Length: 161
Image (cartoon, rainbow, N blue to C red):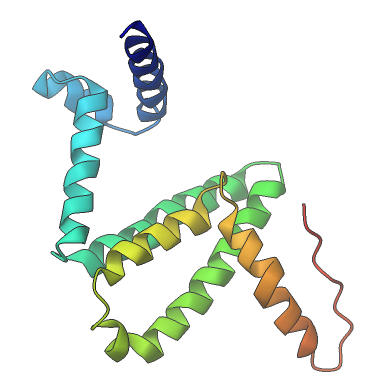
């Protein structure tokens, strides 16, 4: 039982540190008298339920796919490091490719159950630096295809990190 309490407190403090980075969450927490962790987890749970039951799912998933990466891209452009720029350029490349394919197959995707749940998971996988999904797909598919259709120009091969 003590191990469970220790694990609970460790994870609670980790989530609390992450939620410290969310603007206005501390203000909402103080206003409603609810700690940040339950408030943030509740909001996330409601979001997931709305997507799961397909209530404004397309809008909600597209907001996640556009708004969060937009702010992270601006942050990356304002920072002196180049690695974060590369990550977000790769994300936007894959996101654009995915949206183009989705546009032409939308009439089929309408019939796929829980499509927006899968799309949300896919977008989170693409953008999360822990998974590096955009980089993996880029190196495996986009870069080789681009090199095959280089239109007469010599294109250097992308390097895996």
